[in-house]
Amino acid sequence: MSLIGERTRPAAPAARRGTRTGGTGAVPPGPPLSATPGLFAKLVTDRIGLFTDATARYGDAVRLSIGPKSIYLFNHPDHAKHVLADNSGNYHKGIGLAEARRVIGDGLLTSEGELWRAQRRTIQPMFQNKRIARQDEAVAQEAAHLVARLRAHAGGPPVDIAEEMTGLTLGVLGRTLLDADLGAFGSIGHSFEAVQDQAMFEMVSLSMVPLWLPLPGHLRFRRARRELYRVADHLLASHLRRAGDGDGGDGDGLVARLLRSGVPPSGDLCAAHQRLREELVTLLLAGHETTASTLSWAFHLIDRHPEVGERLREEAVAVLGDRLPRYEDLHRLRYTAMVVEEVMRLYPPVWALTRKALAADEVGGYHVPAGADVVVSTYTLHRNPAFWDDPDRFDPERFDPERPAARPRYAYIPFGAGPRFCVGNHLGMMEATFVIAMVARELRLAGLPGREAFPEAMLSLRVRGGLPMTVRAV
Image 1 (tube, one colour):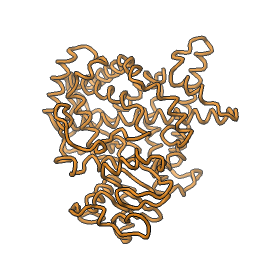
Image 2 (cartoon, one colour):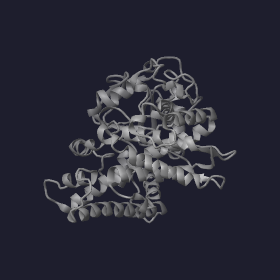
Image 3 (spheres, rainbow, N blue to C red):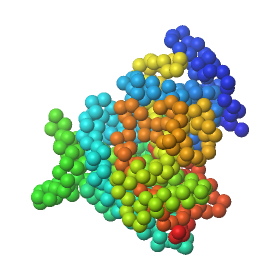
Image 4 (cartoon, rainbow, N blue to C red):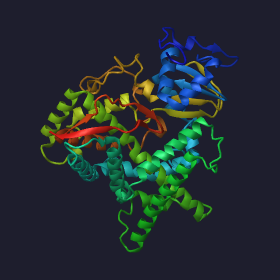
């Protein structure tokens, strides 16, 4: 039984079910105030269930009143287009990411206004297609190292695939963008877990619990932040040392670009150093977490659908033979790309795009007051039955380019939309496609009997408790 009502989608158009206001538009329907304790409990423990139940019960626009907050949840492609693209200037980053600013500072993920635009201009050239194409060898080599590590476990005890994917994506990030071996910092993945846990705690506690209190979570977070700052300082110092020795590596690389753009007009070097730390920590988080999440869910779904794994293997052998993939292979690994896209439909790594309305607005006929917390949940949008047949079924054929579907552009937004569209989408797609093809060509990963995989909605959509799988060679 749902905490907010029976999960049946009303037949009436959503815009007719709200309560009229004295101003423009209607108030979206939603649970009564008596449901607040249950809603808060689900916000803490089951955010995916909260949004899934809400849209199933009330439709594509829902108002969730949780204590002092009212969350406006929108679940229609037109709503997503309006909030994220057409009127994006009226919306800043919202619940979850706003609280994360207290945790990770003003990096590209959380910054706003001119600061965000300057940061975007700084890193955008790093993700141009021609530059990504030149990184194909590094990505393929890191994928080959992953395959070798997994092959060493063939026939042995289970391996945590989620942890392996984190190691892989950090390796790719270090080689392609940072000119560094991030494998030397084995604690990065665990540090980011602590950061995400703290960001979610900040969200549900409304940032009202002082960080200086010696709570176990606070202490774990402070240790993690110190470790991440240590990594950032090492990357900065290493680049400066190589530059001083006349071996600056890629002078147009990411760290070099950040250093050139890092000193503010005031000339405050301490502020510049902290800003560089925050930008590097943010890029470390965003640059590995989403792809690791996608790959973890991919191997879980492939295991559950052996026919998909067999087809992936056949394509990899036909296209690659026994060599490493190259950038030009991407268009030939078509079925593999379809699998990646379907994985991101069912388990989008960024499961919710949160915003705060700067001024009052109207979305889909509904009034959104100034200061309101607005959420477009890609998880529920990608499973909206109005736009996806049998939406909970894993079916890569949905993305066959020879069978174009008549669905709205904004029904599928795994990389976001509008000005804040994910800058690393091409690198992420190449990485996921190469890894899946190379693993499927040589290995079979199998989940443990009786163990289910449950989504954990943090800053990204992780597999709760990891993903132990056994490995055998094909």
